[in-house]
Image (cartoon, rainbow, N blue to C red):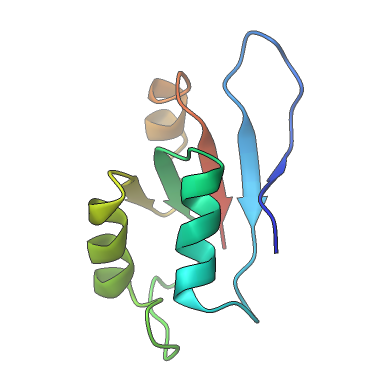
Length: 91
């Protein structure tokens, strides 16, 4: 699992996507840190998970330690306002 850039524009901040289906929370968090992600947009239809570490509250708590902002849903305006930092879309 690796966060992969989706755009190559020199003017825009990088946009990454990541999947977590087979990953452990520590691996996902490590990848976010490695990629210097500062904003995570959780695009899941429902930000709930039975998988340990991936529920809305657990994920938010873990991201707070990494100083990563979590945005729930596809709130495009929040993503655009944060375009100066690397963004990760997860869903």
